[in-house]
Amino acid sequence: GESVGLHLPTLSVQEGDNSIINCAYSNSASDYFIWYKQESGKGPQFIIDIRSNMDKRQGQRVTVLLNKTVKHLSLQIAATQPGDSAVYFCAEGSSYGQNFVFGPGTRLSVLP
Amino acid sequence: EAGVAQSPRYKIIEKRQSVAFWCNPISGHATLYWYQQILGQGPKLLIQFQNNGVVDDSQLPKDRFSAERLKGVDSTLKIQPAKLEDSAVYLCASSRTGLAAYEQYFGPGTRLTVT
Image (cartoon, rainbow over all chains, first blue to last red):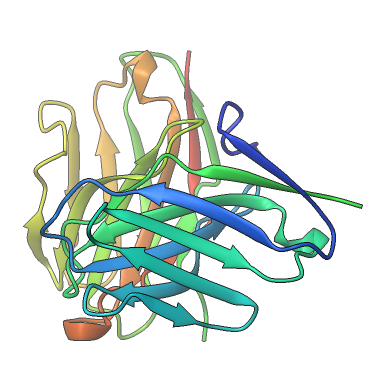
């Protein structure tokens, strides 16, 4: 499969450690935010979402934090595993599925 | 449930040629999206359909790109004529409507190389 994000910022973490991936969004009017995971040769896969009326949401091993004051979003992955290695994108848009804009992405590399 | 299907997976053409990509969304998903993903970047929305109507095509280069979803199910994206800068992965995604529309399911993409 093709490589996604050859020149993206890379975050390297040890297996078992926690990972934090950050994203700055641009539109103050966005009320919906999503994190996607993209493995090489595949389309993006939904991980977790958060609405603008929340500042934290937890899923299985993942937590998303939203700071509307500084327009910042973060994805925390607990106990990072080799299967978490991928490119991660944040996306902002409206809660009715419109005006979606993806961020530039971060490559997560999990070291054994 | 079956995922979003796209074909072909890979296509190599020369500049000024034409190319078409096909997408079959998840059954029951009324909204369909086409994205362009240039290597090293996030996907960029080209066009969004709800059923067979266009919701947003503000970033579609209409002088060379066209898309249709005639029966509100399958969709075709066409480029004519292609330029070198069109080399990218073209992703199709689908979603439900209303408040669940945020969860888009992506297909594997079509990788286009223009030489």
